[in-house]
Image (cartoon, rainbow, N blue to C red):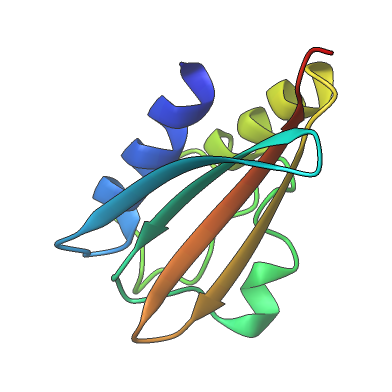
Length: 104
């Protein structure tokens, strides 16, 4: 819940999106969770660092924040043997993809 909450709050606070899409699916024995928006996107240079602790994107995109939310998401995903990645196109939106192993 904390992972999804942080991702959704990040969209609301920073993306200026009017749509959030969340989907769940199974893929190669793993659970895939996609959280995507149609907001302003994240610049290519910023995208490299968004999961780093205390990193904040350019000021024009953000209305405050501590730079901890996405770092916490990554840490929680890793503690659950999962992974997270992000893709973004400026002006089109951002998509976060999480993978978690499914129990056998």
